Length: 340
Image (cartoon, rainbow, N blue to C red; front, side):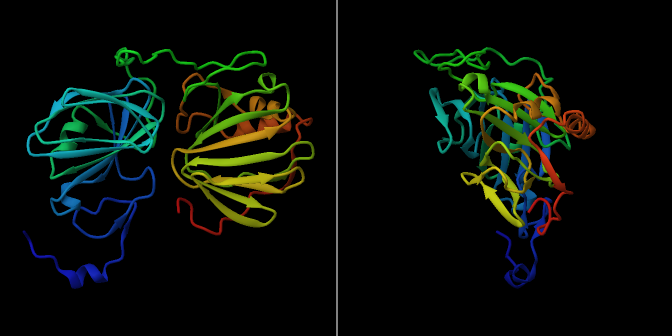
């Protein structure tokens, strides 16, 4: 084992948003690292052997329902997988389980592993010691600068679920009010620049009482400052980071945080982490038209980076003066650097 120069380590500022190539302190914001697209999944490498002095490797695995990896055994490598988001079916040494957020599965050296993602935007974190797991995980993949998997890969194989587990998925909104189920990745999808808005409930589903929109977005700056006269907005951060500017005060929302903005609140928001998910719950149905006229149709449950021109949003606002949107000024200036 090599001797660690403790005095040198004491003096080093962390490397930011890059893999250092040597065992020194470093920081990676969500979505940063060395990215590869493999069999429809985005693998973001968080640690290589050269970054850890040969101690371990680590990576995030992000993918759509149906993507996965088939039986693989690695001698002399211990692996652990933690379910960060979504749902996964894993088979380890012949035993199969369905796991959700907060669950984990662990693979001893020489044991076979197979996993299949069961919901869109499922994310796993893999930690292995020593090296060897990354080479297997990345085999056949290609480097990418994207922060999200694409949906143009070949269709995944049919899921093989354990006996007694229902395989049906509910992905479409009904057209009338009434009870319904909706799986992750479902809803009516509308594309914004570097973002996807998905209606999880329209006013027609709730008797006009409210509607729900899930926003999946890349890092992006504040939008124009504005307020609404006729409806209330509620913001819930499901994952990532959302900056909200509210009546002159800047607030950071992370997973589980909630903000209520009644009619008249001057506000704006910015996205501070890649693949952030934000749930918006808006009272009444007056603002439903906004999301339809400022976006383009989308068929996949993820956004495509750089696909939609920002002018789509502006043109939609300018051509629809009846929207409940009162613009009061340009976007706020950031007080915190983007991505932090």
